[in-house]
Length: 254
Image (cartoon, rainbow, N blue to C red):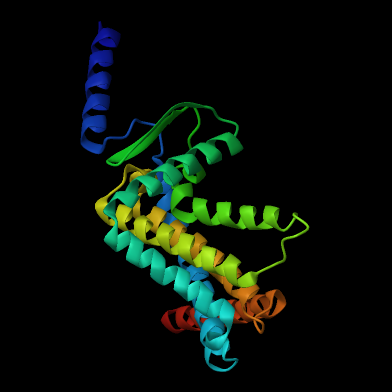
């Protein structure tokens, strides 16, 4: 009799625990794991931000990068994208298409299959048998149309009669990347289930960091004075300075 009575008691306690916490016993929610991961990503975000903005201001002011054709074509693309996004609200369906295609591409990259694909002006979705952080957050850090523009530019260079035109390349990058960023910010402010998948804090930190990695790479490619080795050297120096500052701060408290 005692064993029979213990089972309902145990079941009721388990149900009470689940109802209060929303967590099954023995299961660690992804958000509990990803929150400290996001905290650990904050120092790299700070170091990369410092390195990027230092390099950008240095090359813009000291090397007169702002007067170069590449800079103005890129800026022109950014300006036109901003005007289009503000003046033509129906362009949202173009973003939604790229958003869902990005989900699908990253599903395929991870060995999954897409069973349904829907795109409307109100939003879209895919149904898949594979999901993870990269699949869910990919549209927020992988600019689909920018990648398409770069691939198309590379393929065009394979045609013998076509010569390299860096101005057109960076005009298209500015146009598509700004389009991507404007709608990415709008979607995040609107609220998306994708952002809540691993926790809002974790998602925002990852999105910021990976977008900053992308724009840093574009700066290195576009600027004549910012090189990969120089940027990496500055990144390492800033990381060492940040680590020394943290150690000094901790030692003062201890």
